[in-house]
View (tube, rainbow, N blue to C red):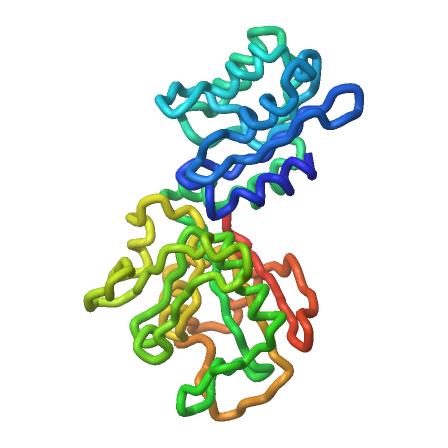
Length: 317
């Protein structure tokens, strides 16, 4: 299942509006088929894995990160039906599908046809890998990652606004990989006017994974951009399940005040700036006690001379 979850991450930022699912077909202890949801949502992970396994799927075990879909669609067959027709003997599911069109029906349908179904293996890990889909189904909005490149003293620029470069090339390359894993990137009007960011993916071979560009502003958006007027309006963004917020300080603060940040990416450079621009504006904190217990560290690593810390909101689904 861990391998299936790793496969599912390959589709993140590409599979929307469908979830980024991973699937492995195993027979006699050997992987005979594997798949993950492809660009635009089709084919599904199960269909891809079954196509690869062919006749070897008969009597095999399927490990799938999300309950196989049960609802009818003009875009393709139901995955629960595909598994039954392939003769799969056992289906191990990480996460029950929160989409009401499936939500337990896929697993029940498989059991009715004599297939052994187990559910819940590594469910939390699968939910994190498909966090955008889960949040869209449960809270009606995309999963939000806030990215900050900071000095040791929490600055994002000199006092005159100069910010190139706070972090080194390894940290910047990692940030571009993160862009490739999101459906859209958002910045505020100040960042747009000051930096004129391209927000593209500048890694060889991944240029076509540059996300859509979103502007948080009360004014008009330039050509090639979409605009929202408030953080809460991310719920209206079509086909955006994973949103990356890149700046600036007031935009970061606005999302934090609204309780709409699910994940923090902090890239810390080993420099001190002093009287520069703070990374985050006022988030409305009145009591220091309220700041504790809101974030948990999930990853930390060196990136060249810089350091990456990843935090998840404790209350995030």
